[in-house]
Amino acid sequence: MKKNRVIKAIVQLVAQAQELALSIGIPNILQPGLVKEMIIASILGHELIHSKRDADACDPNNPDINTNIFLVMWAVRDN
Image 1 (cartoon, rainbow, N blue to C red):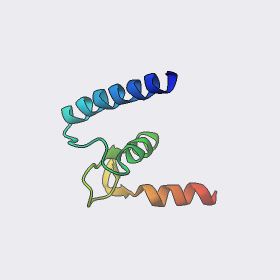
Image 2 (image 1 turned 180 degrees about the vertical axis):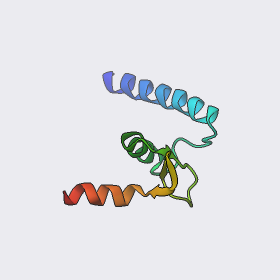
Image 3 (image 1 turned 135 degrees about the horizontal axis):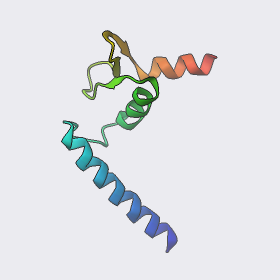
Image 4 (image 1 turned 90 degrees about the vertical axis):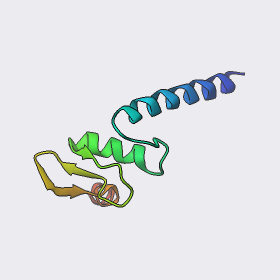
């Protein structure tokens, strides 16, 4: 029983997150990798780029500096 309540709560929170995402132009919060990209961009203080074909994020002070989540994760792993 508890597991079903937890799953229902998660579904409700994802629905709320999708509503918030739509308010800033993100059509699909469940796009593969998007939430990870949001987390990394937030940690780095970068702006999220949510289109699939572009970089994951960019430095808000210099949009020419782009971030790819896999490169960041690789760098963190090696340190």
